[in-house]
Amino acid sequence: MKNILKYTYLLIITLYLLVPVAAFADAGEWWNDAWEYRQKISFDTTASGADTKENINDFPLLLKLHSGNFNFANAKDDGTDIRFVTSDGTTLLKHHIERYDTIDEMALIWIRLTRVSADTATEYIWMYYGNNDAAGGQDIAGTYAVDQVLVMHLDEIEGNPKDATAYKNNAAKFKGGLGLPSIIGTGATISAVDDAVTVAKSPSMDFSSGFTFSSWIRANEGVTDAVLFSMAGDTGEIKIAVENSMVYCTVTSDTGTVVTTEKTTGISPMTWQHLCVTVVPDGRITITLDGIESTWSDMKFSMPLLTGNMVIGNSIDSSKPFLGDMDEIRVAKSAKSQSYIRLSYNTEGPVAKFLVVEGEQINEGGGMPVFYLGAIVKEISLDGWIVIILLILFAIASWIIIISKGVSLFYIEKENRQFMEYYLKKENPLVKSGSEDEFDNSPICRLNKAGCDNMQGIIKRISGDNKGITQKDINRIRTFLDEGFIREEQKLNSLVVVLTMAISGGPFLGLLGTVWGVMNTFAAMAEAGEANIMAIAPGVASALSTTVFGLIVAIPALFGYNYIASKVKGVTAEMDIFIEKFILKIEEVYGDYK
Image 1 (tube, rainbow, N blue to C red):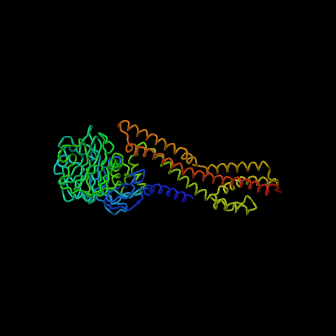
Image 2: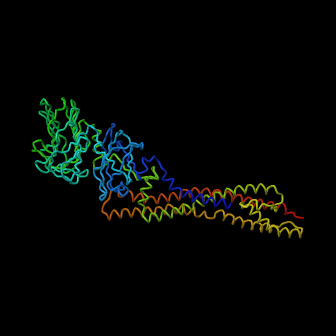
Image 3: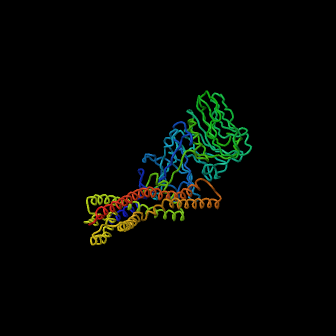
């Protein structure tokens, strides 16, 4: 029995040591073992997310990283070790970094998603990092599809804005302000009459198959007559303008036919808004504002041949500047779909509705438990750890008691049955032949021994008097048996009180840690004077972890206690029955002694 208990204790301790390993078991293949960390980036195109109604190919996704969703200390100082891998764990995605600031802990990264499926919340990619030996893996030009002829992030501090596409349609001339904070990093400011971004005509700017212009804009107060985009040929022209704070588009064909859309609802001054204009040859002109189609007009002719320079932020003659700010200017030689435009707005705007950056995994682990356990463990405070350690000790003690008691009761029930079979075959109740050694785990056997030892003196007396056993003798024997019964019952119930303490005390101790942790979280936010979900979530999650540990302690203890209590009740009932049978046999054998 002692060996069984020893192995039981070793088993419990081993299980508790293996729990962290099991929790951090690998849930998926690691793309490359040279990278130490990864995070899952999940996408939601359902109605509650980006609300995408059709599949989209070659989409440039903006990923915004900050201290709330990314640990900058675990990546290289310039972010050049960051890689993006598809959900199959093998295919690298092209990307480039617009901004990577380890001091302010802010990064803007563009990723080319080969496909975005409509109305699903199950798609994801992996972001790997944590390899100091990694060389730069960026592909700026490869981030954009071949139909994208101009992408200006406007992240320069000085000089002319650069084109991020493979066509390198950099600004030939620029006048205005750069480097000012914008909706996506930094942007450009148009503040003077002749301010504009001028891009020289190139062979890539063939809009015969379609046209898309998009930009984030923030108009100053009182913008009544301004041009956002203009490009002309010998006779044809495309112009996107603002009149009385309302946007419209005019397309003039090579034959002089003019189509002008109705004006959109008014744009809000001093507010960032996403504007997109698409032109489908022999189709229609559509203006989309903040992801919602605002107005459109039929266009029953092909695109004009545009041979002049592209002017952004002003008219061609520099007479109608758009006084305000612009960011993320894009021009494509195809008409982007409404789903594409809406997704751009939902991924680049201030309210992200498309992606979720989940918790950090380390190379030695993986899977969902690593996501959350790893993030939570980093945030647990000292007081939380104190509570958790106490609960772990409580859990270890209760599990040891549950298993050791369970094993002990198994052998007690087994040997009780064997002893009763042996005992009922004997006519003389005082025959103990080897039973003490044979049934050392049986409390009934020990009760029998106590009764037999007590009967020895009584037998000597009644043999001398030649009289039977008296009621007084019976009462004396019953007293000794009852005393033995109580001692055996105490042994059976020993240490069970620890389980009742775990059941009632574990959740309350966990709740204490939770309340204390939540108080600390809100007190810290009050001191900082800032509140957002990324600041609140880690502290609250770590605080709630103590309640989880409290329940982990209490739930097994509850089941174990009920099991042990039912088994103890059965054993005590068997002992009670044996006492009555023992007394009955004594009266039958020695009651009429002659």
